[in-house]
Image 1 (tube, rainbow, N blue to C red):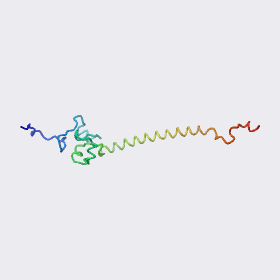
Image 2: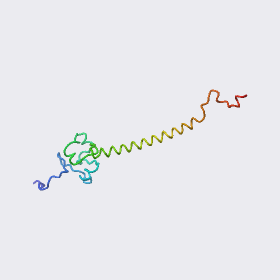
Image 3: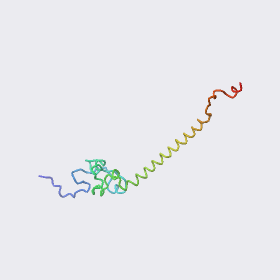
Image 4: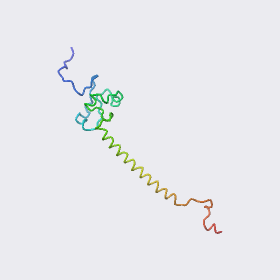
Length: 128
């Protein structure tokens, strides 16, 4: 006989297409709604795979906020853009620093005037 499971309401976390369930340690739906998370809808496929399957806009994916980060949904895009801007800012600062250092070094390097063809001789030598 089949075990009696019919009395249980179907879990919304179960994805159509098979008995695959969300990682029990994954952030809950409220967390996923308010923050940028990347929770695959089940153990069978990763978010990257879901994206490859073209599932990013599937109802169950958007409704339960699965793979928000991989699918670049709005909750993530704003955060991502901010993060990227911050990284870009840091990179710019580093580049400026490097430029400053290079310029300082260039000044030092230029200090000895370029030696002309006769540069091996000092002024005293020229007088002789």
